[in-house]
Length: 104
Image (tube, rainbow, N blue to C red; front, top):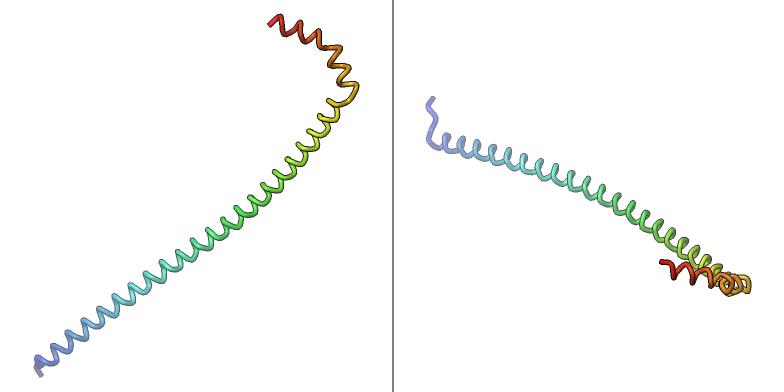
């Protein structure tokens, strides 16, 4: 039994619709894969950001500790330089320093 032109047209439409459905499914899968990759990248960047924040906080704490230590040492040096022993030693050694400077 020969196929009518109407049947042929309907078959063409059906084949075209199947092809479009297959293409749409392929595009959907591509988008889902891209979304999964982007989600992984976002999670990785989020982890890196957290690690950078932790490192930054640790660096700030270390900086504050070092500044505190430096200020303590500076106070010690100031106290030493204001002592009578330091002043007397500087006065006694002044001629030696002057001679040393003049020889340069």
